[in-house]
Length: 300
Length: 223
Image 1: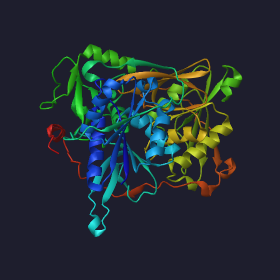
Image 2 (image 1 turned 135 degrees about the vertical axis):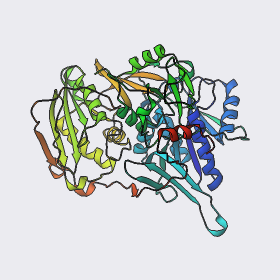
Image 3 (image 1 turned 60 degrees about the vertical axis):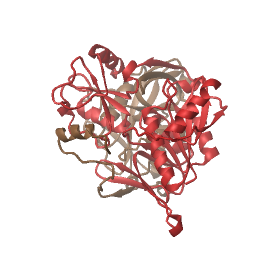
Image 4 (image 1 turned 90 degrees about the vertical axis):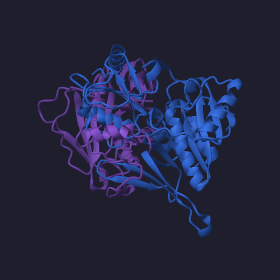
């Protein structure tokens, strides 16, 4: 399989985010079955030499063989192709990977389709990965299929048969832990940002909701349950925050939602009626949550 | 550069790409475009169907459709080529679309438009306004909202929104073009190569049929 590249986001503690862990674990499954080197492509601002060993150990433990680190002030802003594109294209041209993998979330929406269009490469979004091991003794090269639930069918791509590189974004899934990994080999890349952009960033949620990709809501004057389902399925966020007093209003759930999805809860009550037995991953005060939601709402 | 720079802040022209039955993403994109100061907003559609929208939001100045049998399930790159040809002929300064934006729902169309036009692209936009020679676009990210100043021209893919737009009272007139009328060779249109199959069971997918079963699945971390 040669090379796999995983776009890897680091949290503020320089550990891979849950989505990045899942993507690296998926890449490790592929590498074990088919043989491949896993390169973690990391864009991170202001990394100093004292933290490089820490990052190499963390990503090696999550499944990466090598880390290619782009350290630039622009890397700290929201990942946009106008700023991060040169880094991604350098990865693709240098390593010529079979697969360029993005975890579910914002970078998958902002970066992956543009990268696929520019290379050009095959683009396969919201994929679940199926791997069959190779047995070269009998001439079996194994299988690697990407599958996606579409509106009324399953779409599938055989990566081994694909004629060119495949850029894939993953469906969300349960974070898996790869144990026993050695510290990854780490290389710092010196690349300028692709463009000078004026970007102002507002923190949307604090503390325990930091990894929420999307705020969802229902009820009068807010995004309807149907629209929220569409948004959820479209973006495949790593996590969702539901604004609802009745989880039954969310049935049926989006086709692409994995049983491994983690839920948060916004409200002062412990859990709403109908959610007995559901363990919310986080909970924030309703006032804070509504303020965040109002700041994020489309103002038409 | 786009026409906005030449016109020094006067009327700009925004193309909004819409499906045959414009959904919440297209309406959200339309709402953002209509909210821009001094913007002339046009709807653009490409497909093999007869594009006759039941209702068009008030403020949309014109509706353009490119039709032809070759546009049945086109690849996103080909669809982008067709739409961009029309947009450039119309003299638009920017393109707004939904994040999914085509029947296959891959999210590739906006990116393909930007790459073929060689202009900046952002997705997940939920607000926009014009200041000087830049469009300031608010973009959702993980745990943050960023406001990005994009130069003209640009492509913006918008999140769906529950935009309550007032509709035009009379059915709009749709200007229809064929591919040859736009100077596009029909053989240049690539069909989507995505393999379509009957529903099959995914190894890691558990089918649940009730709220109770869903909750049980959510708690089951064994798979």
